[in-house]
Length: 170
Image (cartoon, helix red, strand yellow):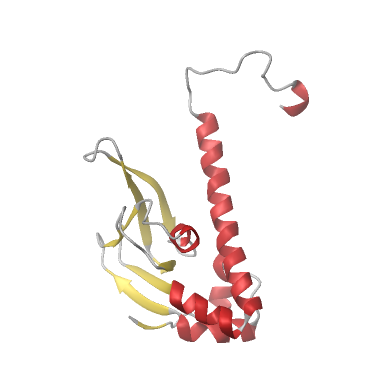
């Protein structure tokens, strides 16, 4: 991997680096590693460890989830583009990857490892806190989106009338 070439102006426009000052970006930039991958490269594999958060500088990736009950069945959960990040869940919950991530075209990625995030916390707790809060906000937005999709799925289960939401909440 090579040193990050993205400008601070570019980074600041994206949620992972939102709210960071010029000085804070200068602090974290030496820890950011950049790499370009060809189409059809598996960046993360479901069930395997991941110790980094990844930020898309250019390109597009698919997040693919394999069924736990039928290993031959998988589905694209979402497509991520320039400015999106992935790998946050594993940094926060320290578990194996919940899904695989595969490049759909040549893709440039900036990576920040858990170890380097820890080093940042030792140097400047405020910068570390902003990075972690930004990652948590991204996870929260994705969870809200997933909740909305689940709410729209037609199911056979219905709420008993005594539990149905009142018009005040609809």
